[in-house]
Image 1 (cartoon, rainbow, N blue to C red):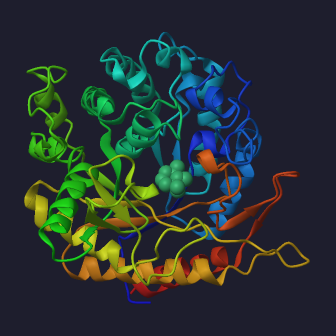
Image 2 (cartoon, protein in one colour):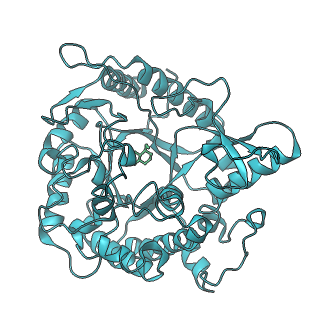
Image 3 (spheres, rainbow, N blue to C red):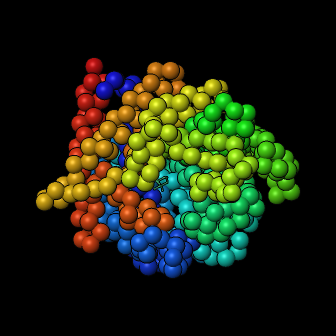
Length: 456
Ligand code: IFM
């Protein structure tokens, strides 16, 4: 493996609803994911995150695993309804106490916490008042961020506000495959703007307490299916929608042009002051979550229906021809990580903050041996290829502060339930026993080698 700069940081990530469980403990309120997962027909295996990995009770074991792995940082998220069960009002002490114990455990092991305030588990009470479609939710988010800023000040360097707001919007509000299960198509777009507004307001609260601000987006390099003009136009349009709509306002202070989709460039839900608030929240660190590239093709006017990947868009989205796929069916293209990082640098220039790769990983079909150990060569190959591609981006001059693997533990993979295992540690969901997979040991050796190699 080529050598990264000595200051490069390694980490592992999780999110609250995917690992915590303990949904009725410590006065936690209901989240949109509790409501959604308990609705028949929403989750592939009819499971819920009620128990998930039971990290609410087993966080100390998780911290031990992180220490064994040798990571510098742990990226986790805070369950908003644990802190404000109804999404407003004073903090619940038991909720803060849980994260207090987690922070103490991490500090004892010398692991830096990189918390995210919002990884999709909105208090259901706020959803009942319109969720992210309501402007008011942005102000409630700022109120919550102020509580968490007081809590984290002096103990944490950087706090991320949102995780993958585009995916949350697309799957949760446009397509309805994620909570809160709304199927609004492009009518969901105010939900994107209100998340960004919430970020801007929250960033001010965090900075007022001396904290650095981050936000993680999911990015996908978009390739045209061919050099035909319709395919190139489709690729450009999807790139704008997926990669730019929620990044341009943060880094450039303006919205990207969505006229391809017939959308107004000055919708009434964007108030005159909003873009200033959002741009003032320009992150100090941009989180990049990368899984795969996307191919876009203009629609064949003779075809009777779109591909199932098209999601009602006026073009077709496909996988990558000839690429191997993960258990999820996602194309494996390590170079896409280099490509998207270099694209971000070229696109935003000096406006681009330092990057932290906040998620990268894959689901595999796990077949434990008789001792329960998973020999996940496919995941090792995935990580090896992507970390090498990341190194090429660093060599090409992209300022990348570190790499956080998704994910520490097999966990609740949203609408897929427990059917997609992304962890470098296997979790037995009957006993909650955690068993490091081969990829865990591989990553541990890589991190150790980095430390030794960089010590001189
Ligand atoms: O598990 C998710 C995570 O919550 C957000 N990013 C993508 C991961 C894999 O689907």
